[in-house]
Length: 433
Image (cartoon, rainbow, N blue to C red):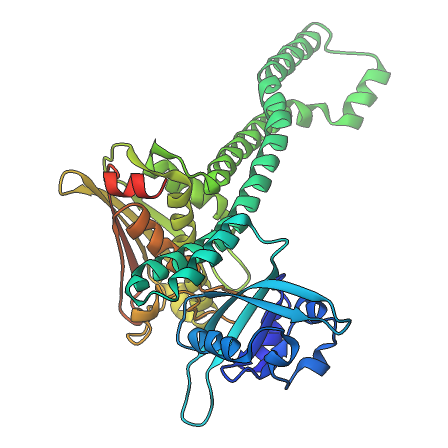
């Protein structure tokens, strides 16, 4: 990543972010971060980060070196001295973007947040990590805490998104139900009026001239023919809105931590309805066809909001891959229409399998081992965080004791396979409460 690419990415990052190398030299900095230092970015660029901190320089370098060796966010604490002399204590998260090369040091991204605004969970987690840094034998525990921190970041964002979706669904639901509930009597009333008009026409075939003119003016024949179709169209429309509201309510449970029994097919369908607008035809690509081969599945025990999140991540990636492929290969797509296949089945008596298959461009062999690494993405700057598959992997393997893997051949599409037990093992359900 270049400083220019970082600057482009930093525009969509609300949190203070710094692009620097492992020696501490600031290569680029976004506006929220320069505001923390109370200095313009021009005066910070090219300077050593330690020049603006009250922390011991050796400790700062140790922290940066740790960040330069990890693709997962390393949590720390930095104390900034602003240009006005004020002291600002920040929680920091750092990870390597470009590993060290022969002639250049490693490149890092560092995110800052005032501790006064930090979530209590983050503060406690940071304190725990600082304690564990001194104990070499507890490296595995440290790694687990760091992975939890990544999920907390994403979970906060999804929690806010879920609340917005739930609020919108509630506000839409009431008026739509009112309209939908009154459509049936409205259709009956309209039918009665049409029958009454027919009786008038039967017994008074020659009405006064003024009525004849009004009939021609409003085109009564067309109204009689169209009003039933019109009310049927409204009924179909309100039914579709009700389905969308139901899907939004399902999606709004993304932040739920309670274990529930859910219908996997209902969760998949809700995700597809939310993403339906992205499956439709665009100027550069035809419709993406979704083929469902659902098996007979019982309701399974899981963290329903997190399973919804996994489906949303994988389906979104499949749609992105197909859309990008279509834009570059329009002729081939015309003869080989884009498809996403979803297959579900029971295996080993008490496990289920969900396969999500697309006929997109496939994945290069050298990329496959990195798919589930945090912050790894093949998308353009600003289009992907690199967290979706990493978090999905943790949800399936850590939270549910299942498996998730990818099978892909370049030029022939990609298949993601999710395997989870029908009931959560005691060690998972207890340890994650």
